[in-house]
Image (cartoon, rainbow, N blue to C red):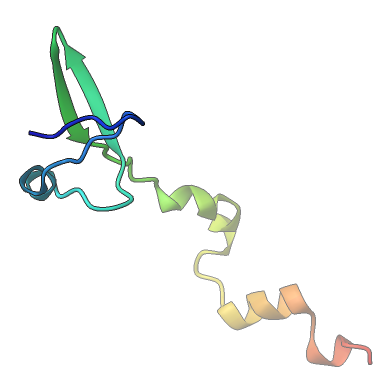
Length: 80
């Protein structure tokens, strides 16, 4: 039976960590119902990577070499 330390910490038994697929560094959530406490692995919402492409949507289908050339300038434009 796990015991709460003086710092309020508790060791989660290995079989519970295995069932919940919890490992070091994972976040957990406690849910309370009456006098019972439930331990749940915190689920992270998958963030849509598409929102980061919002400003680049106008480049869809464009030639990558042309995009780089526009961003960097032509090689003969570089001053030494």
